[in-house]
Structure formats: structure tokens, C-alpha cells
Amino acid sequence: MEVLVTRIAFSKVLNAGKLSKLTEQARRLGQVRSLVWRQFGSTSGAHLSAREVRDQWMKDGTAATFDVLANAWKETVRDTVKDIAASRAAAKRRVRRAIHLRTSDEADRRRLYAALRFDTWVADPWLSRQMRKHWNRGRNHTHNQIMVRSDKYQTFTLKTGGDVWLSIPGLANREHVKIPLNTTLAPSGTLRLILRDGRAEVHYQIEAASMNSSHRPSEQREIGIDKGYTEVLTDSEGIRHGAELGSLLIARSDRLHRVNARRAKLRSIANRAEALGDRAKADRIRANNLGNIKKRRDTAKWEARVRTVTFESVHAVLDKASLIAAEDLTKSFPSHKRLGRKMNRRLAQWTKGLTAEALQAVSDRRGSAVRLVNAAYTSQVIPGTGALGVRHGDELHCTQCGAVWDADHAAAVNILARASDPDIALWTPHTRVRQILRERTGRQRSRLPDQDSSTASRCECGERIIRMLGFEQQLRKQNKW
Image (cartoon, rainbow, N blue to C red; front, top):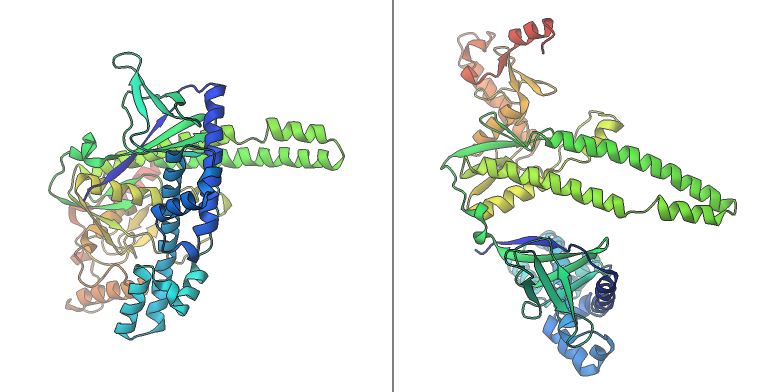
């Protein structure tokens, strides 16, 4: 299966004339997007393709009112129809659940599923009601994008090995806008230009197989990983990857807290000044102190840094193994622990969704496999024993031999073992998982001569123990811990 990867090139310096032309063209194409959503973003456009919309507008004269080149608005229509289809597909997932609950007749289910799949649900009253219920009518908010077909732009350089220039069509025939880019690699395929903060972003897709990272060798092993907050991943060998993630998240959270508190104070001053009739002061504060350009720029830099750290960590793990067992964190588990406002604010910055995206993207690109397992109690089970330990922060205490595990390392080892566990499936409820673990521990105890004796002699932590409890206490006494 062909895997595509999106690449982004940025413009260097856009003068006011070029920026105004691109902005005006994006504004007019935004009106085209709005019209597509307004006319075909509901049941009336469920059966129409982008070509049918295009032909209809050319026939009734709507296309003549756009005041942009034909290829520009046609590519915009094609892109918008794809967006509508994506939102419709998301609604279909919820309707499928409703079909499953509505009837147990397999023939009737197949009929409804087929009508939903081939967009003939408009003729079925019940399916139409369900689609109207779950498919909220969309509205366009994009007025800063330009779609450029692959044969409608040119790339060139001013000197050998220099940065690439991009020439795209303007608003009129034979009018081109030349954009200097910050890369020596020419973009290819259909381009998406996004105008943000006075510069142009050029988005394009390439085949993942053409990237050097796709050909990095991997060892033919299996490894388990635990997703963390202070680090991106901890593998079953005890190695932490992306240890700087925690400092990045904490620094970002604390900075946002300070900045937003100051902005709230300035906003309050502006509102008070406006209430007292000093409109000029309020306008000055909002124009010079409450803008979003610098805020968006800082956010983009931070997100790029976190993304780099995450993907580098995933690549490092895939260098060691061709199959990765990872916990499935899409399901939340109830917790009655109160962490406080500061900790909750920091945890809100946790990027577990980005880590899951990186695992999926990099494994697909490199031909590796990711196996998701049930995450229940993986960080509370002592590896090698199956018994529940006592968790204190980042430490997991073995109740049998007194060993102290690093909780993340123990979780990674348990995740690897759970990938081949026949009793605990991916969707097994956490209450059932706990029952299975207790039953296994009980069976181990029942084989002892004395039912009331300790199982310390049967502990199989072995050489995997990170540190002994006595050694930890000794270090604490010496103030070295």
C-alpha cells in the first residue's frame, strides 16, 4: 500500500504586492468553498461528485461569478467535496452503531449497511433521519488557502544548488506570482498554499518510500513500550527515549499560565477603559498587547519541537525491533485521585495523541508492526510474577521480595508479555483484568505446601530488579537519593 507523507515549505520574504495578490485570491476561493458547503454540504449533495458540481455550475452560469481562473476554483471544489465526504463518513460511523442497535436481523442489517455505504440512504426514511441527526451541517471557515494543480505551477532556482522559487497562477490569465521558498527541494504534485502570519506555507505530499528514514534497518525482535509524560517512551529493556519531553511540557504549561494571566489583566484594563468612555486606550491595548501573531508563532515552534522529539524517539525504538507492543490509551480509566490545578494544567499538555500518530506513521513507513494491548494495570503488576504491587509515584514495590521497580519499565515489560496473553484481550474490561490477575496469583499460592505461607521464595523478579529497597533507604540516609 502506498503511504504518503505531507511536507511543508515556507516562503522566505513576501513583499506587500505579492502578499496582497495571494490574499485576495484566497479570499475569493474561500467564497467558492462557502458556496459548496452551503449548497451541497447536506443531504442534497450526498450523491454528487466534484465533477458533477463543476458541470452544474458551468451550465447554470454560477462559475462566471467567481472572478478567478477556472483551474483554481475547480481544484477548490474538488478539495471541498472531499472535506464534505470526510465529515459524512464520520457521521456514518455513528449511524452504523444505531443500525446495530435497531435490528438483529442480519439481512436487514446488510441492507442498511449497503445503503449507507453507497449513499443511497436518502431513499430510506429512517436512515435519512439518522444521518440528519448525526451529520451536523458544516460551514466553511477557510479563507486563506489556494489549491494549485501539479501542471499549473513552475519551480526554478536563481543559481545552482540555491533555494527554490515557486511560480503560481495569479488572478488573471498569464499573470504569475513568484514566491521564494526556504528549501532547495522543489515541491511536487498538487499544492496547498496556506497564508498565515504574513507568509505562505506550501503543503505537498510525497511517497514515504522515497524518504531516507523509510529505509533504516530494524532488528527482527519484539519489544514493549510504555508511553510517558516525562519521556516519550520507555521500552522493555529499561531505556528511556525522548527524556526531554517532560521539561518541554512543563515549561510550556507554566509559560502559558503566566502569559494568559497577564493577557487577562490587560483585557480587563481595556474593558474597563471602554466602559469609562476611553475608547482610544482600549483600542491601543487590543491592537498592541492582545494580538495573536506572536502567540501563534511561539505555539508553532513549540509544537514542531515536541513533534521532532516524539518522532525521533519512535524511530529509535523501531531501530531495535520490527514488532512493537504498545498500550491502547484510547479508553480512559476512572480515577478518584485529586492532583491539583497545577498538575492538571500540566497534564493537559500531554501529547499521547501525537505519540500514537507517530507510532502509526513511522511503523507504516518502515514496514514494521504495532500491536495494541489492554493497558489496564500494566504499571501495577510486578513483571515475572503476575502479582499486583504497590505503586508510589514512579516506583513499583514488590510485595513478595521487597524489590523496587521503575514503574514505566515494569509497564513496558508487562505490555510485551500481554501481547501474547490469551486471557486478556484488547477490549477486556479493567474489572475483569483485575479479577484475572488475582485468580492467577491465587493459583500460584495454592500450589504451596502451606496455604498461609509467604510467596516471597517464589518471586521471579530475578535480575530484572532495578534497585533493592534496602539500597534505596541507604542512599536516602546519605542524602544521595
